[in-house]
Structures are given as C-alpha cells and as structure tokens.
Length: 255
Image 1 (cartoon, rainbow, N blue to C red):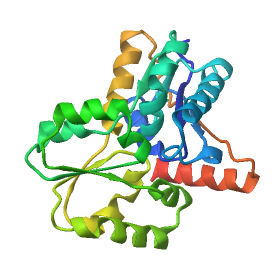
Image 2 (image 1 turned 90 degrees about the horizontal axis):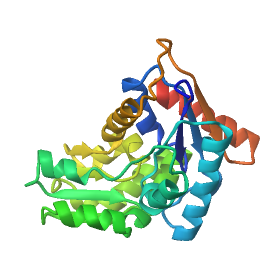
Image 3 (image 1 turned 180 degrees about the vertical axis):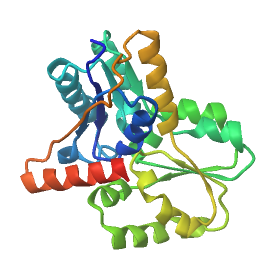
C-alpha cells in the first residue's frame, strides 16, 4: 500500500500547478494524473454533473489504479464534489484544493483583493463559508468564464485579449490576486501584464503540505528513495489531442 500511487483529478491540465508542488515535497511518491479534457470546463456545469463525473474518475483512480490517496486538483470539483467523494470513498484520504483567500487574511489583509475563479467555485457553499470568514471588505469576486479553456488550449493571443478586456478596469488598483482555479497560475505572466505588480495567492503549496501531512499521519509515505513515476491520462477520445495534452503536461511539469 505504501508504494501505491497518489491520484490527481482535474478537469484538464491546470492541476499540474498543484502536482508540481507535490512532487517538490514528495519526490519519492508515484502519481497518476487524470485530465478530464473531454468534459472541461467544470465551472459552468450543474452540481450533479460534476459529482457524477468526479465519481467516475475517482473510481478509476482508486479502484482500478489502486491509488492510496486522491487529490482534487480542481477548485470546482473540490467545491462541488469533495464532501460526496469523502463519504463514498471513506477509506481513501481525499485532499481538496480551495481558493487561497485565507492567505490574504494572513499576509496582506488590508490590500484590495481580486478573487479570480470559475462561476461554479464562486457560487459554491464551500467558498461562501471561506469568503465570509475571512472577508477583508476590500474584495471583488470575478467569475472568469472561459478563461480556463483558453489556458487549457494554449490560445495565447486570445488569452491576452480576454485578460485585457476582463481585468483592464483593475489595472493599478489591485494588491492581491487569488487564483481560484488551478489553470490560472499558468497565466500569471499575462495577468500581471494587465494588472501590474500584484501578489498572487493560490492553494497549491497548501495542498502539497496537506498531502504530505496526511500520508505521514496514516503511515502511507513511500519508503523508497528513488524518484517516483508519473503517468498522465486524458479523457479526450481524439488521439492527437491526448498526445498534445500529454506533451504540454510534461513540459509544464519539467519547466
């Protein structure tokens, strides 16, 4: 069981930003990353659709791949399906990412804050609890419809135009930017080009630390001192798309 892999679930390849942190603190673990690009993005889907699809992927990673833990590396999946999955797969530790709004409270609570996330994440009960607990009364919540898709597909020119249109009114006014989707850190450079010199906050570091803490507490750390393996799976039925996703995934991972 200790040498079993850790599963990662995401609606696309954005969760690579979380996996990269996990590999940094747990290099001897093996990982199985499932990118559900066939159903990407999750942010605009109904709750029941998200739960059902996450359940299907969790079943693959836990029961077929034999993963000893599962990381929900998608904020929308975490917000909508984490509780359900923890009840159904009670014997498997499930670590769920969430927007790093508490980090703003801890580091720069007085600064004007912009939370960028999918509509599904911002409307979720889980995020509402987090937001009202740490609200600095200087925060705007911004649903970035379609942004994850542009990043997922690598459409750079469209991405820049989208961000200029979406974020232009905040230029020079924002100090803190919470990246509430795991895709968004892949566009930090482009976001900063519009907003200026801002502080970014995302949940990847916290998830990596939590994963290590949970595996340690449950005596599930891999005792090996050899670097673990990473296997990438994408749900697209098109072979060329899968190949392109895999190439981008490992380019990001090793970049």
